[in-house]
Image 1 (tube, rainbow, N blue to C red):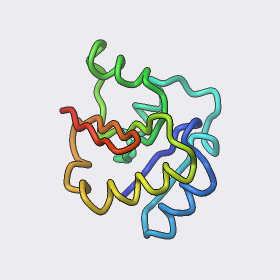
Image 2: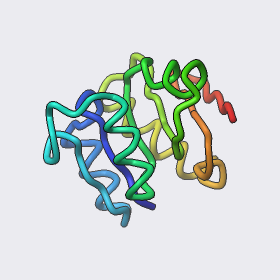
Image 3: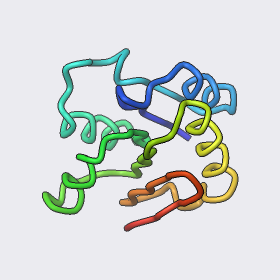
Image 4: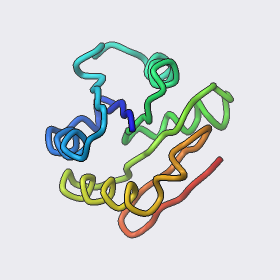
Amino acid sequence: MRFLLDVCASSRALYAFLEEDGHDVVSVVARDLTASDSDILAMALEEDRILVTEDKDFGELVFVQRASHGPIVRLVELTVTEQVAAMRDLLDHHSSQLTGRVLITVSRGRVRIRR
């Protein structure tokens, strides 16, 4: 799978886990620290990447402003260690959901999938 890690979700541990698991990973930090949320959403869509973020503003872009988007994974109030574990669990149990216009919110003990 192809991932784009937002600035707020660009820990070395998460990046390394995804890369070591065989995924193509790019970080917004390496691309453009000044990119707006709309630009990041467009970047992920153009490059056919799953956006990983902690930022709840993407929900407003997607559901209120109806912005075009691909899959988004929002990690909510998780430590870096929990983020890695959550992504491992998501990939192990919900990878088939990581397609199309979906927003998956992951918090401690909960996965919410909205299309």
